[in-house]
Image 1 (cartoon, helix red, strand yellow):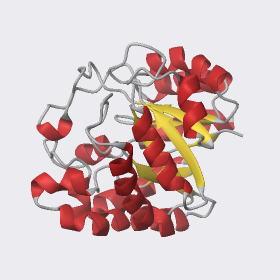
Image 2 (cartoon, one colour):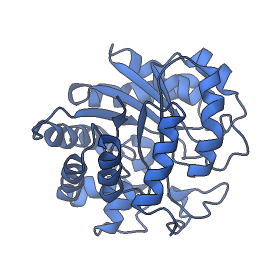
Image 3 (tube, rainbow, N blue to C red):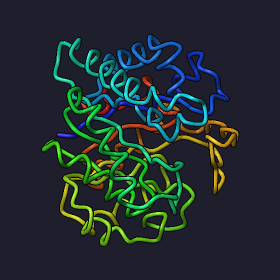
Length: 288
């Protein structure tokens, strides 16, 4: 049976009133309007997702420090876990919560400016803050091997299921952004499930068979629908957000998702610019 994730949070927050230029991204809503986050979680549950993802993509100290908010990282991370847990528990059917562990030194970065040990310490703090609220940890949008290893190793200390997801955004082939092959990455990381996320659907379609050859573990995919995300994009440094694609409405995106299921994806969902309407349509298609 295919597991259905939720869709993106950050772009959905913007769609509902969060400032498009907020350099600390989805953490803005955790501070200024947590009801926005609560409502999005509820809409994804209504749409039929099986797994909600915590809004913790920006609630870590390194991301908050330039804004004088580093001392609130633990508070905001726990709040992200609590909001997702409350929405899942309010459902009349089983809904799990995945604790998001994001890249800590920019998204789509092949060379994070931190050692494995430094990243492990920071991820361990996030894991401890989220642990009581989540059923599984999702190390997402990983671009470098040592980054993915640090996130996965930190999550594994809880004894909970760990999913590790690689991004291909800005890359030129079916491998990690730092050039590591999927086979080497899967061999060194040792996650329970591997995914591809936050990159164009076309990249996922090309890379999924390569990832399938690299591991016998379950696979998942959740693409974005950004148009022309530039190589070297640095959102927290003020790079403008790209526009949404106009060819990835609910129906065409669902067709992509169903093709991934046919290719062997066990978990599907959406990332940036994929919202509750997309997830509802995918749910309908999966149940048909």
